[in-house]
Image 1 (cartoon, rainbow, N blue to C red):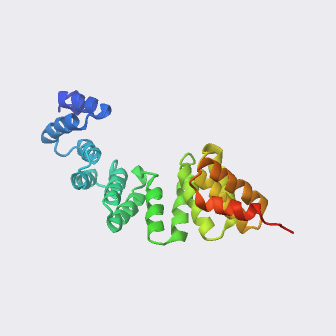
Image 2 (tube, rainbow, N blue to C red):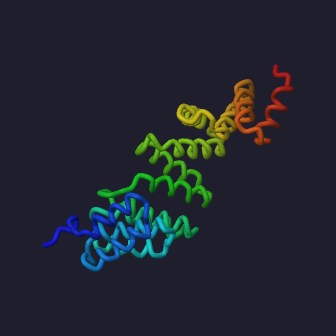
Length: 229
């Protein structure tokens, strides 16, 4: 049987795909689909190509076909993840949620960033506790994904879990020291613990990094003119 990797369309298509020439890659892989209609690798890449072209309905179609061909193996977790991201970009959160939950079940090919999107969707739906759980899972599974740390801290500040939030925000600022919003949140958290001098310091830093931050500027004005016992 002919090896797919020896097919000139595969060689040309992968070169175009890796170079980001989505139109050329699409033409090559559509030819390959005719020769290898049940190859889940080809179908999955076509899903990625249509995703990159912004043709999300078509990308979802190919990802679903990938799942049928993969039969619970190899590409299933990633395909469900990409379906979820596609629906998320389309604003179809209910469909995205279902796809991400299916991705979690596909242990052999689970995409860790599924927890990021589940956290965002839970936040949009007002399920803060659930969102914190998802961001916590992402933080543990992928320590380098620091935005999970920030979002989890943001929710903890909202819930007045200030001490826990401070630890997360300090961890986040170790790698992103000039993120103004993190300094603002640290100010809010320290103020919530009645640590006003520390709060003032963080609010001042937030204003220094983002002069348009009127929230922090107001807090600086209040705290700087207050006589504390």
